[in-house]
Image (tube, rainbow, N blue to C red; front, top):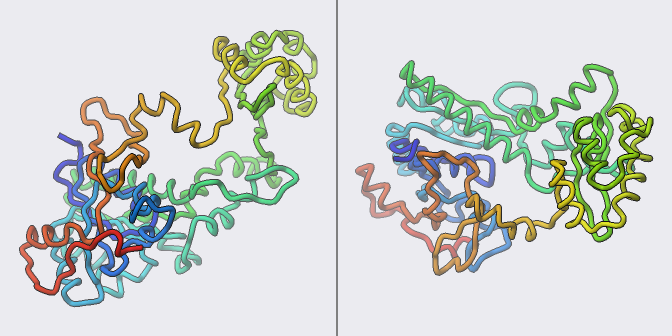
Length: 394
């Protein structure tokens, strides 16, 4: 039996952080009902690239769910959502703080109708503080948090990460918060509100830069692929490409030198200690790349990994997806649907020995399960929006 079997989750979220969290709950057996606006649904349904009529963006974070098309601005929509919440275990929402209160579905109102429900709110800046009323999107929060200021090369501008880091982190923190609140409910019988902010989520990743500020009063600098406290811990060039080296201690440094027939570097006074290697970083990089020059990346990796030195090729995303490790870990899956063809999405990284994730339910069409869910709730209405074809959502 899946670990979350029997758990009913109402997903009122859109785009990424909330849908990602809800998908992970669904993978582990929860019955996740994705409530969507009837005309276009989740904004992500309209974001390319497309696989036929489907958004690849939407497909990536919306498996393991059912879709209920519902207009919350109508009395009927309010009635259905109220009935659904009275039977639910978890609500996840990412409305602007205060918006659901105006619809009668704020935490206090929902808690009064179902005291066992765990109410998870995801927003840009949380429900407290001077920024609580602001809308937060990933690039804005990356900029405001200082995250961009430490990302990029020393002589270049601040850079946003290649994926929406704040959304994924917030989704994972939301998952953790929900499970913690459910565990507390097991003891107390009461649900509570889980308040997750994108800003808090990415700020929590800055423990090292924040430590630099607290310890020295200095502003952390962009260092590209270098590490502020360790060397060599960076990208280096071989004869035919680049590889990442992570020699995080003296033992690994000695092994690295032995692996590339450069033991003299290990005893060089400039490089004998980590502090010396950090101080003489430019000379160290030059010396290592001279030692690497006769070797291809493949030859270097064979030597380095044989000596136990953490190292890897700098790959493109297609190269990474083609790695046999991806298949061995079931991290790329297909749904076997004729509309999607060979299109694959990333799998679930949480591997349980007794209760593996079930990833077989493909993302839903807009409103695909509306009628079935209404019947389960005992609600009938001739005017309800039924199944909508995915091509109607582009």
